[in-house]
Length: 598
Figure 1 (cartoon, rainbow, N blue to C red):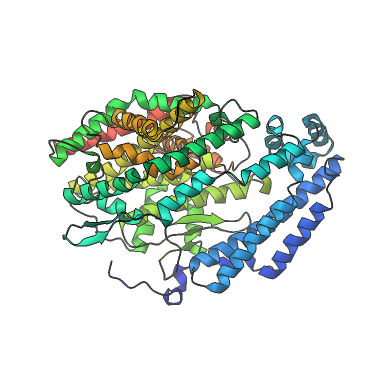
Figure 2 (figure 1 turned 90 degrees about the vertical axis):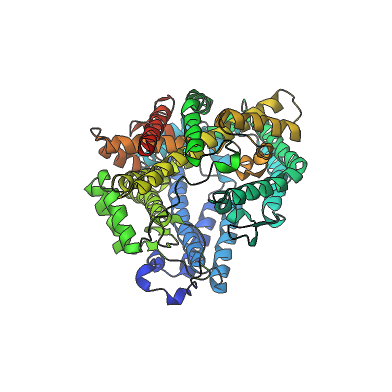
């Protein structure tokens, strides 16, 4: 905690990524002008894009060229700024690319309506005429899926104008959760007064000191309880927006509208909720066991994040963390490990924190660049896990870019967290199997169990809450604060079971969840982790052909709909099997944890 953060210039270059590889062929300014030229070329095609197979192919190829160059300078400028956010020159270049991106989108807004003005049969005929159009078949099919949900030019203009008046609910919540938030102060473990914030809440609610946990919990929910009516109005507005868009665009419901992009039937959403309900008993047993280990007569919501052991893992320098990750991921096969080694030898990774560097971690790059990753490694086991996670994203991008054309390389959000989480699970399994003490084994078992609790059980609870509130709106039930709070409170009791006291404050947890303003999104966390656990344990259990199928999955990019790509690695999310597989591992790990205490 007391270490001084170094300046960027004080970090050894061997620990920095090499972004200059992204623009070594042409300068930033040359690439910037190239984007403008390509934009003007497409503008000159207006009214003629669909006139022949040759003109459609010409547009698609020019569009690819524009997008590749724009992506190149946009990503480069943003990542350069992330190195040191105090660098004003980098900030200016970043803002310049954001403006350029907006200008391109506005100038080319005519394209999709023009393409959709033709029947899809025309497109199929053009593909037969021009073999080069075959690589665009899926992209064109994806566009034409929206044909019945796309309105006339005049109606689309009205909706576009109306959209400027929407989003207020999200804005209200954002300001209450960021700009205006003040949670007050609490006394920490040393009885010193500290300000509670969104950033440090997780630390204090997980404190070994029960009084600190309770104080943090109550302070957090007092704030959101005080603003419950305002936030209820904001969320109600978001739900009404969802109904407006789904109705005018001819969807049967907001849920159907949200899942349409990924071509996912609403049965997948219901299937997740139903399957988790069928496995509540395992969650209840876990909560009961935690209560027993912690030695409490009553277990409250502020106790569910408490560590079961006092011992903290030793520090792990980066070079050691790197070797741990490489060893942990060996079950993926030598081809994967050989490709992964390039991240270290070719300087894909920006490793250490420096003054002004963007916090957190991410993987990003372009079709033509390395799949870079930024971490803020601090020698803790969490940093090793983060490294494995972000390398998963980067390897997904590496294989997708290597095996797909530009138009098909980008994998959908529904699949985005699977490769990263497979890596985390393999790392967790490796650390558990190689732990030298009972306390370490307990640490890694509870880490896995907590991941399932917070990502499958808890995110499914959020998903069910969203579904129920939209159903109430559809049935004419007034969406008051009491309706939100009572519905959430009953769900919380249902998901956590009889051994956890659902304190009154938890009825306001719905009011602090930002994802509710990106409706029907959170279920992807639960399906993603379920898929990742099923894949990882197939790999660990040596299921025949699974490594090859997994590499095929990583190589698929966005060349098909997400559920179809998942089927290539043996995961069928239209069934209960992947979720049941994941929750059976949860139950198995719980039994192993109990055995360590007996």
